[in-house]
Image (cartoon, rainbow, N blue to C red; front, side):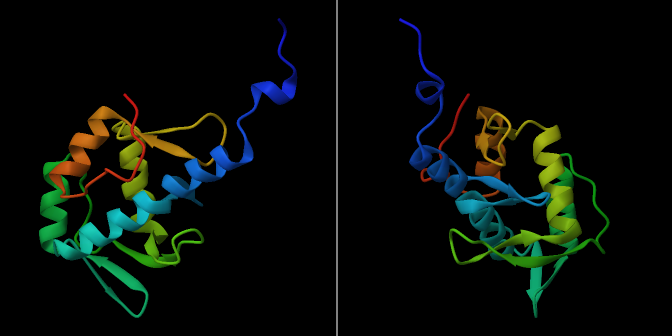
Length: 141
């Protein structure tokens, strides 16, 4: 039996759900995972946010360096309002640098040709080291 083009596509709700879980917003991580990432970085004192501007702390530079990401302690970003979560994720240059590291380290991979991303097994371990629980985020090996 041959499938029609409509049968080969994901339903709109599945696409929306995957974008809600984790996606890119410009060049930085967004969705539930992006918000959880920013919250974890703030709680651990790795970044400080004031009036929408975000700066990497010396502790953050050290801790992220242990995960293989070398950033100057002066690295900055900005808060970016997430359209699905209505909370902030980390944007700007710092957000883009961290997201690029997640892609190059294969913590996350793209979902086809969409902005959606999924967390790999290695990513689950890396996020767990930073105290980010991924029980809400879909994971794939």
